Length: 264
Ligand code: ATP
Ligand code: TZP
Ligand code: MG
Ligand code: MG
Image 1 (cartoon, rainbow, N blue to C red):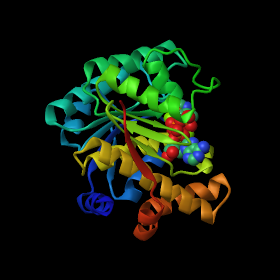
Image 2 (cartoon, protein in one colour):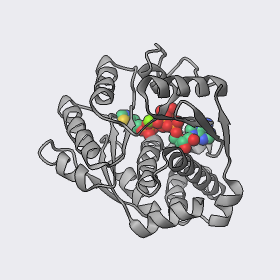
Image 3 (cartoon, protein in one colour):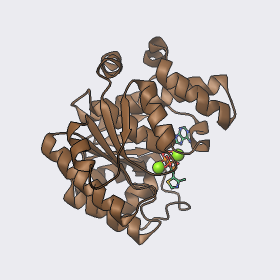
Image 4 (cartoon, rainbow, N blue to C red):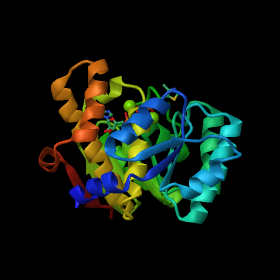
């Protein structure tokens, strides 16, 4: 099952349309190439509807948002919705400023988002809990599971909260993924790239929870393997891209840690 999705991805080379932040564009494009997908960054209001329509997934990331870009994200998201293309939202920094929070909420109001992927602080703020994005610790595992369920129900969508432990839920079923490596926190854009990688998996797997959990686990095992070859951020980043491209499938099957539970 897991193998099939990755093989499919490499065969199909889905087009992933990213409207993303200025920090991570190059890393995101390289990471998508590494897993076999075909990235395109297109931000202009004049072209996003057309691009979203021909894409296999659309990724909206508000990391360095401007009002124009938010408008473009809504145009792209609506166009994707019309064409049946999955949409990922990465609400970078929601809660840090009013503009980020209100823009993310506007996107969620106007676009049918397939999955939101963020850290615990971002998802908490999105769900209306006033939590400092950097600072207040909301990362107890149980809290994240409850928070993800609450947000999934509130926005009637799928949620992935990532951190040391990752949680994916649609509000009813939930999965925990315990792959990953602390070096991922020392390279900028690893969350943003993960959101795009989830988009790529959604392009080849219709079951959103299966696509997201496999993507997150694959990503985490690639990081674990890369960390065996390098223990400093610069070389880790390079080895991580190589592992995303060339992860040994036997190692993935053996090291993948996904557990399932249901909420009462
Ligand atoms: P933040 O701004 O909080 O770092 P982010 O958007 O960068 O958020 P992360 O939660 O860091 O997103 O997730 C990116 C990747 O890093 C995920 O694969 C996640 O599992 C992994 N990760 C994050 N923290 C750790 C950790 N302490 N140990 C292992 N893996 C981690
Ligand atoms: N500033 C605005 S967007 C961005 C920074 C540093 C990148 C955030 O990337 P990630 O994946 O959330 O760490
Ligand atoms: Mg991070
Ligand atoms: Mg992030």
